[in-house]
View 1: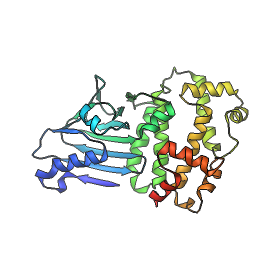
View 2 (view 1 turned 90 degrees about the horizontal axis):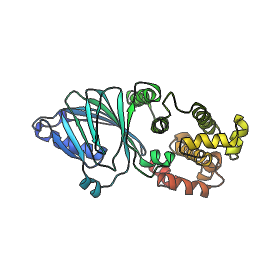
View 3 (view 1 turned 90 degrees about the vertical axis):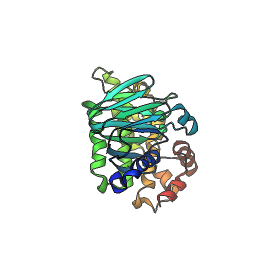
View 4 (view 1 turned 120 degrees about the vertical axis):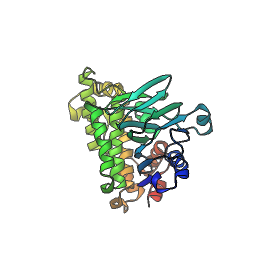
Length: 311
C-alpha cells in the first residue's frame, strides 16, 4: 500500500510528482492541469501482482491516452472507474459519458480516451488484467461499457470495491486478490447484461448455481459437466446453454476456478509447505505438468515463479 500527497513537496514539483505517479500506477498518459502553479492531490494505492485499487482526489485535470501513446506502449488492460463525489467526463470510441456518484465505466487502455474532472472530484479506479475480462467472456475485441452502480450487481460491485479501500489495513494479499476475483466475476456478469430484471431468468439462475457448485467442488478431480448435471438435477444441455449465455463452457469454468484456487494457495503463507505437485492434486489437476501448462497460459508465469515472487 502506498500514499502520495502533493502537499508533501514544493509547489513547483507537484505536477511532476502527480504525472510520475499516475504514469507508474496506470499507463502512459498526457496531462493538462487546470492550475499548474499549485496542484493539490492525494492517491492511496493498494496492489498485488494481479490487481490494483487507487482512491484519489485532486484539483482539475485532463488525462488523455492518445493513439501515439498506445503505439509507444500498448496496454490491453481494463480500468473500472467511478466517482465518489463530483463529476467526471469520459470520452472513448466517439462517445462521451458524464459519470456522477452511482455510475461507473469499464474502459480499456487499448483504445484512446480522455478523462476530465474538476476540483471537487473524489474517485476510485481499479486495474484489471485484460485476460481476467476477455478470458472468461471469450472476447476478441475490447470491451467498454457504462455501469449503473445504484442497484443489483452494480451496487454490490460499488460496495465491495469501496470496502476494499476502507479495509486496506486489515487484508492480506491473498484476501485482496480473492475479493478482486469476485468483483471481476460480477463485472463479467454485468457486461453480459445479467443484471437486467428481464434477462433470461432460468439460464441466469442455472449459471449462478453452477458457478457456486464449481467453486465449492473445484478440487474434485472427477468434476465435469456431466457430474455437475447429476449433482444439481439438471441436464448437461441446460448447464451448457446457461454457461454459453455467459460466454464460457463447463470445462473452461472448472479450469478457471481451479487456477484461481492454486493462485490463492500460492499466495497463502499457510500453504508454503505444499509442493507444486501437492497443489496440483489438491486443486483437481491430474499432474504438476498439467497445472504448470494451464497456469502459465492463464497468468503468464509458472506456479514456481509466482511463489518465488511472493516470497
